[in-house]
Picture: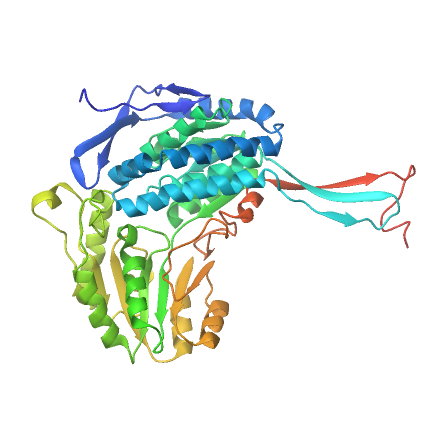
Amino acid sequence: MGNIKAYKNFINGQWVASSSGETFNNINPANTDEIIGTFQKSNKDDVLKAIEAAAEAYRKWRLVPAPKRGEILYRVASRLWERKEEISRDTTREMGKVIAETRGDTQEAIDMTFYMAGEGRRLFGQTTPSEMPNKFNMTVRQPLGVCSFITPWNFPIAIPSWKIMPALICGNTVVIKPATDTPLSVVHLMEVFEAEGLPAGVVNMVTGSGGAIGNVMIDDDRVRVVSFTGSTEIGRKVSEGCAPKFKHCCLEMGGKNVMIVMDDGNLDLAVEGALWGAFGTTGQRCTATSRLIIHEKVHDKMMAMLVERANKLKVGNGLDETVNMGPCINQSQLDTVLSYIEIGKKEGAVLASGGQRLTGGAYDKGFFVKPTIFTGITQKMRLWREEIFGPVLSVATFKTFEQAIEMANDTAYGLSAAIYTQDINKAYTAMRDVYTGIFYVNAPTIGAETHLPFGGTKETGNGHREAATAALDVFSEWKSVYVDFSGKIQRAQIDNQ
C-alpha cells in the first residue's frame, strides 16, 4: 500500500483530505490487482465547503472580462495538449477503453477548451431597432452562479470539459463530482487549472459516491445550475430535485441507438460502422450502436461479414496498441451485460457471435466479455427496448423504408441514429423523420464533434444541449437592455400608435 498514490479533493485552490477521514481505491478494470490510487470518500461537509468556495469566488470571477477568462482557457487547452499522452494512459488505466480512444477523449477536452476560450471574445447578443426614436435595444448574457456537475465514467475527461468550459467562459463557478470509477482524469484536469492560474474557488472537485453527496450538490440554495450525465432513472431524480427551486437543469441520459442499412448501402462500410459503433468503448457509450436493422435483401450477406469481423476483434488491456476492445468498467456492469445475454437467449433471440465472459490468463483479472451479436430480434424483446451499456448488438430486419423509419423510432430514447444508403432522397427523408438529437449518414451512431450541439430527445434529455454555442444557453441567462436617450418618457406600444 505504501507505493499507492493518495489523491485529495480540490477545494478553494487547495488539495485537502475529506473530513470523513475515509478513502476508496480506484481499480484498473483490465487488471484488478492494480490499484491506481486512493481517493477521498467525501461527505456533506466537504461538498458544503466546495460550494462555499465557489459562491465566494463567483463574486469576482463573474466580473473578470470574458476575453480574460478565455485567455486562461487557452492556456489550459495548451497544457492539456502537452500532457495528452500521460492523461490518456491514465484514463485507459482507470476506465479500460483502448488507448486510441482515450487519446480521443483527451483531445475532445482540448478541443472543447479551445472552442470555449474563443467564445470569450464572442458571447454574442443581439442589437435590434427600437420602435421608439432615440432609443437603443440589445441583449446580453449574464452568468447564474454556482454550477454542480455530476459526470460519468465512460468519458472521464471529455464530458467534464463539456460542462466546465462553457460554465467558466460565461462567468460561473463550479463544483464537480467525477464518477467513482474514474476520478483520476478529473484530478488531472484540476491540476491543469491550478497550474494555469485559475483563481481559487472557481473550480472545485470532490470525489466519492453520488449516493452520499449527490443530494447536497443539488439541494443547496447557492447552486443555480445542475448538469448530470448518466442513467435516465437518476436523471429523473435530479430533475425532481431541481424543480422546486427552478434551477437550471441539464440532463444527458440513456440511448438505444439504431443504424439502418438499406439494400443499396455500402456493406463493407456498414460493417465497419457497426463494429465501431457497437463495440467501441466496449459499447459503454450513450451513443453506442445497440440496434442494427438491415434490409432483408442484404441481411444474410451483411451478417456473415459482420460475424466474421466481430470474431476477429482482439479483446484485452487497452494499453496494448493492438487491442480492439477493452473490459467493462466494473463487476456490476459486467454482470449487467451477462444478464442481458441470458435474457436474449431466453427471449428466443439467436446468438450469432460472442455471448460469454472471457476467462483464462490475464482475462481472469479483468471484466472482459466477448463482443456479442444477436439476430432474430423483435420489437417486443428487452434487447430491443432496454439500454444495456455493453458490447451487445441486437440485429433485426425490415422490408420497406417506411418500416425501417417506424422501427428506428420505436424506442423510449432519442439520442442518435444512422442510415447507410446511396439514395440521397432516402437519406434526407430519414434525417427528417427519425426523431433523435443526432443523425449520421453513412457513419455509425458515434462520432460527435465539439462544435455541434450534443444531446437527445424523449427520455434521453430534457431539451438542453451540450457542446457548441448551445451549451452557453445552459450556463447563462438573457438580459434585454433598453437605453433611452430621448430625454423624455416614451411608452412602448402606446406612444407609437
